[in-house]
Image 1 (cartoon, rainbow, N blue to C red):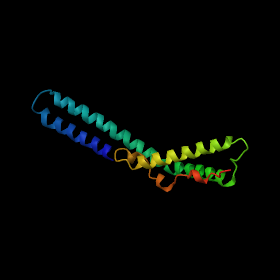
Image 2: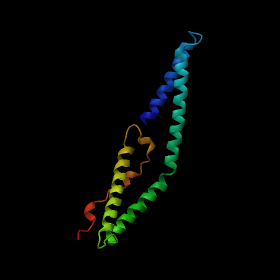
Image 3: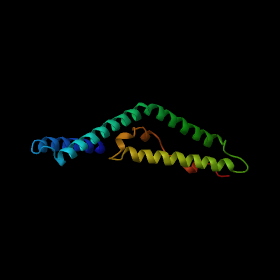
Image 4: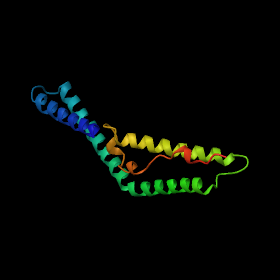
Length: 138
């Protein structure tokens, strides 16, 4: 949110520089800087709005995908599918749980970030990390 506000502030400053100094001089450096600042900030705002829109459009699909991933991991843990004599699947399950936990913690943190949180849909608070203690010890 602050990132977008910063872009808007740059546009205001750019327009101010154009209006204030374009009448004082024929062609001023500040007028050119104001025009460039306004143009770049406008492009940044448009791109930011497109990214926000795209992320929010697909947020339901991402949420359902994450839910299914969670259900799949929990099924493996509860049913004991991962158990084998060579403990090969144990390592795979621990890796899968680790990746799940890292993703959830990362996205929870990013959606609360004051600079880029507006780009991350608020769906990650609904998910929990998986406790490694759920894996049965043999």
